[in-house]
Length: 82
Image (cartoon, rainbow, N blue to C red; front, side, top):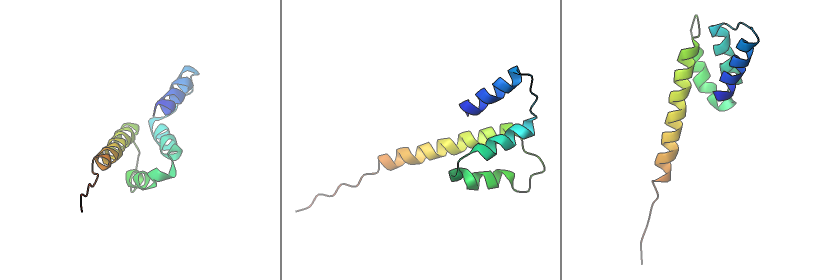
């Protein structure tokens, strides 16, 4: 997100006007293939795409992935036997 925001800021400084929906589409197209299902979910049967909605969904998705990683690290199995 930081790199994307920096590019948008650079374009703004160059007086290039990029519409909100175009920004959202650019962001979605720049995501890696691991986000394919999220992209489909966010764009399915939508008349318009809102950048803020995409941003919130990406932050939520990132937080969920982080929570899964953290919970997996604490679930070690210890077996003591004879």
